[in-house]
Length: 187
Image (cartoon, rainbow, N blue to C red; front, side, top):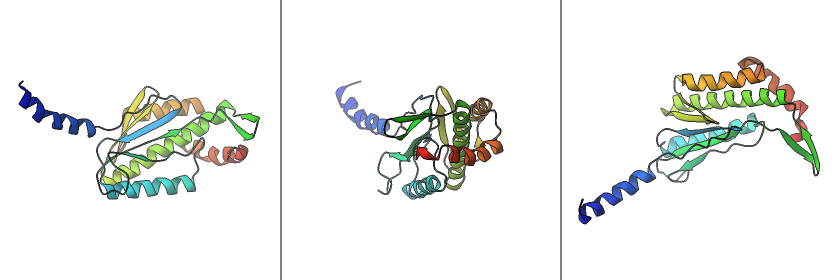
């Protein structure tokens, strides 16, 4: 390839590099997600507002999980990738300076399952409303969520969390209120 061909190809390569979705991190403690394609800014604004509202109505177990954008800020009018993560396990926390409280591992597993399940349900709602699909990852386990729901890999990931907690989907959500109260000093 001659130099002039290389110069013409360089902007295309740069543009393609900028149009790739952000990488997901293989953190075994966090449920990561990203849109599989760029999302129109109007949809990104609606999804960000829904995520913020969901966090107020149903506070996360471990820490807030804001929605981020790659390829532009939410509200700038441009299409962008959306991504985020939900930290599933708390382990311990500090209710007062210098005083630590450990979480019962079974309680932590129940809340992790409830939050992962809720996140998959959120992603499915957003996929249905905005015709987008999502990649998800927990540790090395990867899957997808679309308008029709979780794929088999994501269902297996949720089944593993269910086995660890010893709970089914309805039980996990019912236990959530009790455990929120039990560990209310974590906020």
